Image (cartoon, rainbow, N blue to C red; front, side, top):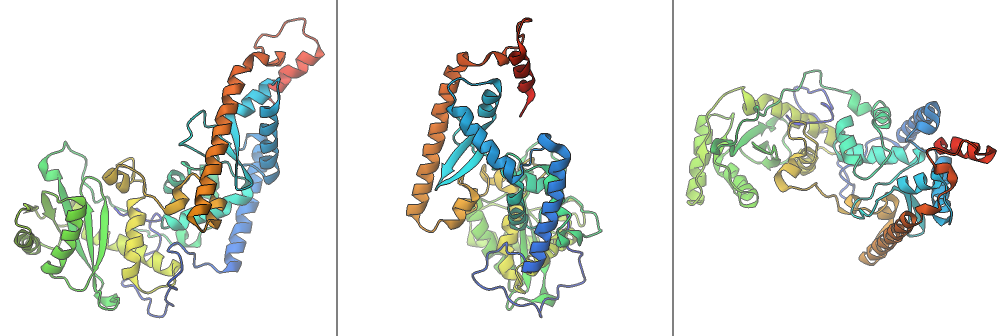
Length: 427
C-alpha cells in the first residue's frame, strides 16, 4: 500500500544502523548520500545518454541541447519583434514565450493568457539536477510519480529522460523482490462504515531510537492519507493521545479498525470516549490478514522506506525520519485515487515552499529575503504581462502574414513562394 521507490531496499530481519553517523541538523531531508565523485559520475553518464537520445531524434526531440535552447529563445524574441511575420514566426510565437526574471531569460510554454500556469523548458545540461532533486524529495519515487511531480512545472521533461535517470540510481536497483499487495479494499458506494481509519502499532523494539520503540501507523480509509508517529510504549492511553491530535485536525471517522486485535481496538475506543465524551467511534470488525488489515505488509513498507531515508540522510534516528516519510507517502500519486492522498484529503497539491512556486528553480535557489522574493515575483508578473500584450498584438496582426502561409498557394507562384512553402515545416 505504501508506494515506495517501487520497494527501494530489500527488507531484512531488522534495521541495523547503530554504526551510521548521525545527519547534521542543518542538512535538508532529501540530501543524497552519494559522494561528490559518485554524483559527478552519475551526472556524466546521464548527460551522455541524453545526448545520444537527442542526436537520435534530431529536431523531433523535446529535449533541447544547450545550443538549441538559446537559439530557440533568440528565434522566439525575433519572431515577436518582426512587423511582418512568416508562418514559422507565428508557430514559434504560438508555442513558446520568453520571460526574464532577475536578468535571466527562460523559455516557457506559451501561456495564452493563463498566467497562473507556467511550464518551463529546460536544456539537457539542467535535466540531471532537476531529476535528481525531485527523485530524492519524493523518496526515490518511480517513473510515474516523478512524471506527476515534474509535468506541472516543466514542458519537456519526458518519460524517456526520467527512465534514463532511474537506470543510474543505485538505491532504486536494491528492490524488494516480494510483490506489493494493496491494502485498500475495492471501491464501494459510500456509507457510514466507509468513514473509517486503520490504526496499527509497528514494533521497533529491536532498533529502538532512544525512548521510542514503536511506530503508530494511521491511515484514512477513503483518501489513504497516512500519519506516522513515534511511540514510547504500546499502550492504549498513548495511542489515544496521538489519535486526539489527528482527529482534532482532520476530523474523526465512524469506525476504527486494527490488526492488533479486538481487545486492543476496544480499549482504544473506550479510552477515546472517556477523554472525549461527545465523540462516537465504534471498533471495526477484525479480519486478520485481509484488506486494510495487512499489518505485515504495512510494516515492511514503512521499514523499507525508513531504511532508505536513514541511508540517504546518514542518520540512525528513525523517529526523526517519520515526518518526512509521511510527507513523501501522502504527496505520491496513487493510481486507484488518480491523485495523491494529500490532494484527496485537502483538495490541493502539497506545497514545498518556494520550490512549489512559478519562479525558475535557479532563481529560488538564491533568494534570501522577502524583499528579493517580491522583486522576483514582480519581474515574473511584469514579464508575463508583456508576453500577454504581445500575444494580443500578434493576433491582431495576423493579416500581415507572408504569402507562404496560404494553404493553397497560386499555381503561378514563383521560386520564392516554393521555398516559402517548404519552410512551412522547418523548425
